[in-house]
Each structure stands twice: as structure tokens, then as C-alpha cells.
Amino acid sequence: MKYLVAGREAVTAAEFAELALGTPVELWLGVEGETEEERAARLDAARDILADPEFASLPDDLVRLAARVVDDHPELFDVVPLVRPARRRPVHRGAAA
Image (cartoon, one colour):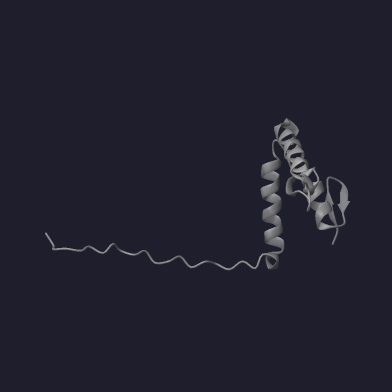
């Protein structure tokens, strides 16, 4: 299956994410072994991008992209529903009035 984003073909999942977001994924996730100085510079660049009006919809785009990945590939997440514990009623101690 071909994935086309903005008229460009994405070959890998990382390329798809980069094309969909308009920025490299590493900018948001970092890279293994980065120094504190590199991390600070990366986060500073990310803040600058988020401040640019061109990228105002980036957080919404990211949520849509994440939802699409979860919907298309649920096996990646091994999600199981959590059972909500029954509400416990408070125990009243002492004599009844």
C-alpha cells in the first residue's frame, strides 16, 4: 500500500509521520544519546516551531495522526480494557441516631 502525504510518497512509517507533521520526528522525540545541551537546543527549536502560525494546527494534526495509527494498527499497542473497581460504600461506625 502506498502512503501519499502532500503529494509525496512515504516509504517508511517514520517518513509518513515526518510528511504528515511537516517536521522530523526526532525533533519531538529526541535521539538516543543526546546530551543535555543538544536536548535543550532541540526543545528550543520545537518551541519556535510551535510559535510559528504556519504550525498552529500541529498539535491537532499530531493527535489525528496518532489516532489513525492506533485505529489502523491496534496490535501495536496490546490494549486491554481496564475494569473499573466497584465503588465502595463508606462504612459507618458507631450507633445509629
